Image 1 (cartoon, rainbow, N blue to C red):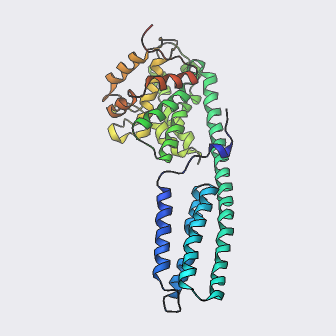
Image 2 (tube, rainbow, N blue to C red; image 1 turned 180 degrees about the horizontal axis):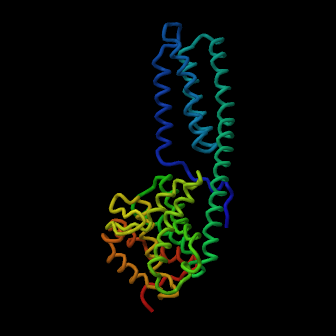
Image 3 (cartoon, helix red, strand yellow; image 1 turned 90 degrees about the vertical axis):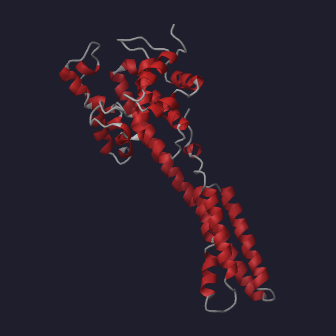
Length: 329
C-alpha cells in the first residue's frame, strides 16, 4: 500500500527541538539584557525583538502546525511580559509594542504553510525517484527472472544491518538503500548469453560480467538524483582482503555502504534457489558469512548482520517472495 506524500514525510532528525530551545533562550537573554529605553544600544534591543521570529520559523520549517503555534505562544508570552515590565505606565508604547505580536501570529502559520508545501513537493519528488528506481530494478528482474526480488531484499537486509550497526544518518541511509536497490543495474548491459548462462562462465564472459558494477555506477553518476549511490554500486563486489573487483579496493577503503551491501548480497544469494544451487538455510548462510568474515566480507558488518533477529529476516524475505528456512530441509 502506498502512503500519501504527506503521510510519508518522516519526523525531523533528533536534536532539532534542542536547537529551537537554544535559539529561543539566546534571543530571550539578548532581548532582556539590553535596556528598553533610549540609549546607544537600543538598536540591539530592537534586533533581539525581531529575532523572536527565528525560533518560530525554525519550528515552521522542521515541525508541525501545533509545535509552531506553541512556540509562537511562548514567544508571545515572553514578549508580553517584557511589555508589561519594561513599558509599565506607558499605555501608548505598550499598545504599539503589542501590535508587534500580531505580526508574529501572522508569520507563524504562513511560514508553516510555505514550508509544508515545500516538504510535500520534495517528498513527491523523492517518491517519483523511488518509482523510477523500482522500474529500473523491475526491468532487470524481467530478464533474470530467477532473481526476482533480489535487489529489494538486499536493500531491506542492508537497512536492517545499518540499524544493528547504529547508523542513522538520513543521507547515508538513502545512499545505502538506493545503492542496494541498484547494485546490479549494470547487468542491463550484459548480453543474455552471459547473464542467463547456467553453466560456468569462461574468462571472456567473466570479464563482461565483472563490468556491471562500474557500468551501474556510471548510470547513477549520470543522474543528480542517483549520484549519491554510485560509490555503493561501484564497490559492492570489492573484497575486504583486496581481491575483489573492479578496483581491487581493500578494508576501510571500500565505502561502508558497499561493505554492508556485500554482506546482504551474499546472504540473499545463499538463501535463495538458483538454477545451479539449492536455497541454503539461515543457519548454513550464517556459517558461510562467518567463514568469509575478514576475507571477502567486513567482519564487523558480518557480526552485526548475524545478530538481526531471524523473524525480521523471515518477514523481509517473505515480503519479496522468498521463504527463509531456519535449518536445512
